[in-house]
Each structure stands twice: as structure tokens, then as C-alpha cells.
Image (cartoon, rainbow, N blue to C red):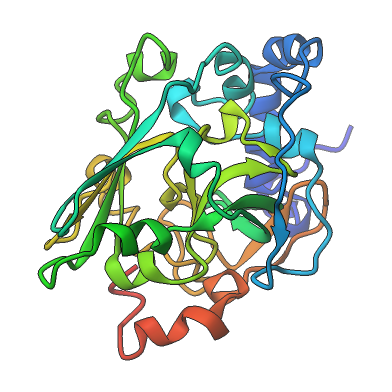
Length: 309
């Protein structure tokens, strides 16, 4: 019997940490996945969105299947396992729903989600890059965040935009855990929020946004890591100072305010130089700004992106 010492094992034979974590999550959530298989992935049959136009802000890449997008989620309000949100959010009712926009604006307003759904909608295929090292290509449906901001008219003192998600432990069982300081809070600089790529999402694959993906209203900021795209938003506030996001508050040495996708700045616990697209085995190189550098890099000209991570 040949016993191999650690020094005898080639680095190429060591299981990649992402694969290990995914296998561990699969084993941990096996019962949940089995239960999920018996459930319909769509809440009902009448969820198709109409009048959606194709946007020029899109990437021409193979789409991640609907099943993967809706069953492999980071949404801690419904559990920390990737499979949990699709199960725990199944009975979540995202109606009635309003979004209040306040703070340093000339015209504070409250928008009803059903009114927002009547705004001109467009489909955009965006890359999603998770800080954990996996990625997807998702056909979101929505409208630019700036359509809301123009209506409320930010004052000259407004420099940042703070987003707050719903805080309701009765409806969101994951909030009964102190894994984060609820409610979930995120933020963008005002110019980032006004950028035409910053999308308010109401749909996915041409249908109303599934609960586990942030229904009824979430952000999609494609050049930043996925956790920056707040889900189930109930309040937008324009402020003078940068908000402290939930992940910054929880582990400030690991999560910075900007969180732009940067292959040259590693997370303290893993490299960001490569990523694994869900559904693929081999890794691919991570692109600066997730491949959107031509559109957004000018906003960070002169900044030390290692210091302002």
C-alpha cells in the first residue's frame, strides 16, 4: 500500500477550494435540494412580462440556465445555504410593496411596485460575478436606476445612495439569525447609481422576478461583486457620506465600499484572479470591472483600486 505524504502531492491534484465548498454545500443541503426538485420553479403560470425591449447594454454570451439562476443563490434573508432561498422564499408574497426615496432630494417620493412595472422595461444580459469565485450570465429585465433619481432630483449635497432591504423576520426566516446586522444595507456613489448600466430589476428570463432572486425589486450593478446588488429594496436614501454596508459592518477587512471586480485584489481568504462559470468545470480569468471597464473605468481614474477596494 502506497502512502503519500503531503510533499508528494502535486498542487494540481489538490481539490480546488471552490469545488470543495460547493460539494460541502451540496452535501449539507441535499435534503433541501431533494425537496426543491418537487417544487415548481416559477411561482405561477401568469408571470410573463410584456412590452420588454432588448437593450444595447448587453453581452453576447451563453446564458446561465433558469434552473441554476433560481436554485443557486446568495440571499441570506432566506438562509445561508445556496439551496435555501428557493425553498424558504417560496411562500414569500411581494405584494403590496412600495419603495420610498428620500434624503437629500428635492422631491421625496414613494413608488408602488405595480406602477414601476408599467415603466418602459428592457432586457439586459449581464455578467454576475460573486465574491466567492463563481459567476453567471443572466438576462435581467428592468429600468435604469437613474429613472427614479431624475424624478426625485438629488440636491447638490447628495454624494451617495443608500439602499435598504426589507426587514421582516416573519416573512424572511434567515433574518432570525444574527449572521448579519439586519436590515441589509448597501450603497453606491451617486455617479455609480446614475450610470446607465445600473439597473433596477423587476424580472428574469422575461418573467416577473422570482422571490429567491430578490423580488420584487433589486439592483444589478454588473461591474461590482454580486453582494453590492441589494435585493427586495424598500428604501432608497440619498446622503452626503458613504453608507456603511452590511458586509462592511460585519467584516470590514474583507469587504470594501466600492467592491469593484478586480482580479488583482484578492479576498483575504481566496484569490479573485479566476472564476468558475456555473455549469462549467474549468476556470476562466476574471476580467477587471467584470469586463465592463470600457464603460465604467473612467469613474475611478486616479484612484488606488487596491486601497479603495
